[in-house]
Image (cartoon, rainbow, N blue to C red; front, top):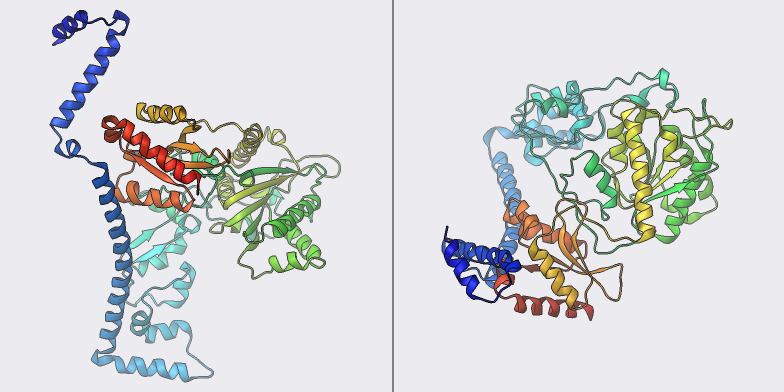
Amino acid sequence: MGLESFLDKIKEGDASPNVWSTIFEKSFYYYWLQYIYDNSAELRCFNFKIHEDTIKKFSQQDEKRYEFAKVSLQKLYAEQRDNWFQEKDVKPTISYFEQETQKQTKHDEIRQFIQKAYDLVLALKPCWLMSPLMVSEYIPPELVPFDVVIFDEASQIRTEDAISSIMRAKQVIVVGDTQQMPPSSFFSGIGSDDDDENQDEAPYESFLAECGKFMKEFTLKWHYRSQDESLIDFSNKKFYESKLVTFPSPVKDKNRGIFFHHVQDGVYERGGKSHNIREAEEVVQLALCHVQQNMNLSLGIIAFSKKQANAIEKKIEELGQTNDELAEFCQDDSEKFFVKNLENVQGDEADVIILSFGYGRDKEGKFERKFGPINYPGGERRLNVAITRAKHKLILVASITPDMLSGVYSEGVICFKEYFEYIQQVERERTQETNSISSNPNSLLIEDISYALQKEGYEVETSLGASSYPIDLAVKNKQQSNEFLLGIECDGLTYNKYPTARDRDRLRRMVLEKMNWQIHRIWSKEWYHNRDTQIKLLIKRLKQLEVQ
């Protein structure tokens, strides 16, 4: 095997026998690397300056291509519209359209108008936004079908409601999340929304679930909403098998993330009221603090029941009578504020979310484990929707503690108990100011870069991030210990997980820089051959950032 010559040479030297295995290992990898270089011209001739210049040019051209595609599409539709108006038999349709626009009253019904002027409407407006029920109501089925029909939030659509739209399509694209809100009629009943026995909440099979049985699936993995990973980490692990690509924040901000606000004297009123007034009052006080301190950030309040949402709205209205600032911020038509319940919040988002549980002990101290929507099949999916609406911060307001949820075997309640405990764990870690510990293994390259930076007096965290796509190294700011001065990414495990150049070389960096990260790239070949030069370039970059 060629070991004889190696042993002869090592015996001739003065190396101690206890390091012979290390010498052999280093020699083995050295010659293996030389073999790779000899058989790969691209790797052998790799130059990091030329490669980074290529990435820069690619990124610029890729962005231009995206903008060009939008302009080309607009031009295509304009040409199709102009061509339609030049056809010989369009005059009757145009005349009908002009007659309808000149009428003051007695216009044709929308369905009748579309039937008579369908080609004209398509020429003017080729893209329509409608609900499945509107499609049935307004578009006659005998008309020429749409080229493409796209269903969004398909987990909330019943199959029977989707059929009318499918009939009017040449091609169907179905978009949705099987881990989010199922079709439901929970709040459409007459009785109290906490009366479990009176509710018939049989789970409906969604259109999305039916399509998943035979249609090819493409998963969107990138998660952009949460600016603090603690907001999405629970759902990523619980519902998405840790497959979401999430991004760590460059600032450890104690005003971001997830928090628990305990209302110790909260009382849940059963019967017709079915709400928790003390908890509603606390929620409104938190909303007032938000308005006074962070008016530039949007605020959403999500209640676990419809009647708790109503109680919160009433308390906001009462306090707003004596506080103009709150009243103005919480106007019904505000784009920066909403109060909703679990069943109608899917699709919404806000910078800050206040989550009101509402349920708790009654005035006799009795605690009945009936929690409305989350008690039923699909309750865990309703919860998943609610806890993933926040961009910066989520506050759980509750009159109970997680131990009070023991003994309930509903999947939704079990999931909520786990989430409750997760919040408390995150709060403990925040108080202890512990460094995040990643389960992602570090390569020898990352360890060597970390060692070189520590020798220069920098504090470094490796594999920063909660997902399986971490930042390889993050260098702390000496002046601000809660901030990272620089993120360092290598061409190792994380880099190679991305399937396309657009993902790994443009979009990932774009997302990180939008979150205010400064990113520095180190290529393994350059570090191996020019370690000292790469260290000097890295330290120079850090020094520049320190004086900015």
